[in-house]
Image (cartoon, rainbow, N blue to C red; front, side, top):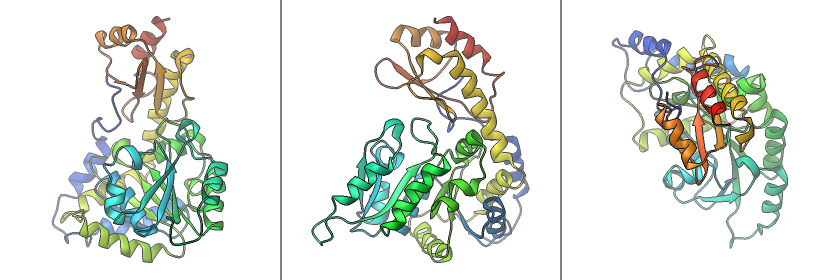
Length: 337
């Protein structure tokens, strides 16, 4: 039983069926019938007019989004453990042509309004310092915590009060929405988010994410992102296969159903490991305290997961699991005492 990562799971059957259905002749690149439906599908999902682009990877999505919001001489305020900082091999700097990631601490990998405000206050308004131009937050965070609508709105208001823009890395956006049962608009444009990287692969997709652009500048930013997508080598000649996956995810609520299953599995494991939890279980990731001997015991029983520093482990549940299917792991955790 695998708890390595939600990147390592099988493709959801409904997504695979959508890929097969798109396996017919159509226009190349982004001129196909499936891509043409993305704006309307995501506008319905977010209850507002949006522009939606398919993007091959989450790293490309985040980096292109930041390139649309931040010039080379600017800075992006983000958490010091954010994916854009520690897991994207400098891609944000590559796409922005050198913009600075201005990292800040925060419990559970969450940015706090007060911390961001204090950092902004230190930046002199002269040419000798890097000016902040954007804020990027991860939903859910690298430790599986979820920003509430009020928390996002507070950061959004702070950003816009200072002339900044707000990007959300939503690799696990579905898990966040499912966790707090809110409307997706409440975590995005209503809270001041300008661009969302909408995750699909972690939620059962094969390949491809979406960039969602909100607000009056959506069309202009999407047009700029299209140029970045092409220039960066991410404009696939058969993009309909990516668009078809995204449509399958959002048109009938599959994205939320998959996320709810993964979250339920995580809650079941969290209950079994309550005394070992390093962070609250709010999405589909668990961080637990395990001795090397305990980790070896679990692995000997066929459970796979990543060590997470000394005496700790990370377990990630996924769309193909639920509370019942992870019961063997829950029982094994309880048996550790």
